[in-house]
Amino acid sequence: MAAFKHPVVNFENAQIDTVELLSEIFKLEEVNQHLIWEAVRHHLAKRRQGTAKTKDKSEVSGSGRKLWRQKGTGRARVGSIRSTLWRGGGIAHGPNPRSYDYAFPKQARRAAVRHALSAKFAAGQLVVIENWDVTTHKTKAMAATLDKLGVNGSALLVGVEVSENAMRASGNNPKLGAVESTGVNVYDLLKYDQVVFSKDAILSLQEVVKP
Image 1 (cartoon, rainbow, N blue to C red):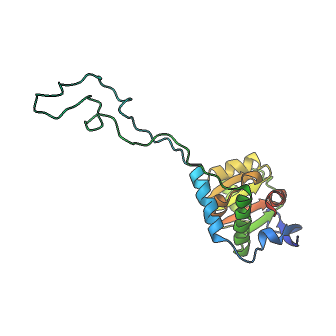
Image 2 (cartoon, rainbow, N blue to C red; image 1 turned 120 degrees about the horizontal axis):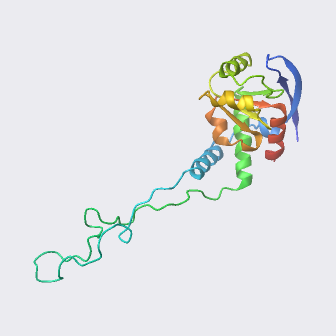
Image 3 (cartoon, one colour; image 1 turned 90 degrees about the horizontal axis):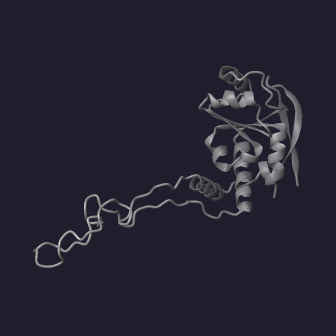
């Protein structure tokens, strides 16, 4: 597999090292937009709660007694006050708890991540830093650090083990998200304007998704 060197910077945006990245992951010549769409669709379907529920005729409250005799009253025949035709009765063919998840091959998921990473890299929206050992959990300090790195707008912070300070600082900012490298998915890569990896995190993710 062809590899290339990408700069690794510190929190002052000074290059201190390089990391070898695979072209088959970060420099794909053609990005498969449909595959990325499929991965996002699967991610959103999988996280749907699917808790919608209505009561059918057997579940609503009310007597099972026949309200009036079948014939001779001049009125329409009726068997139960819980009929779906009556106000307060059961719901016919209503929703029930279900899972919206469906099969999506692991190889396809990993391929989609590769294409999303290539799109981010091509757009110059991928940064690699040494680590996430920040000294404070203050949101303002994290914003200043990202500003030095040239990270504007929303950003996804990725580490093998994101430090508690980084997690707390990003958690207080709606434009930031923090995730471990094992939890990176296509939806998050597209949701945030830029992605900031620690050196160990990008190598760990590369090992998982490589073809």
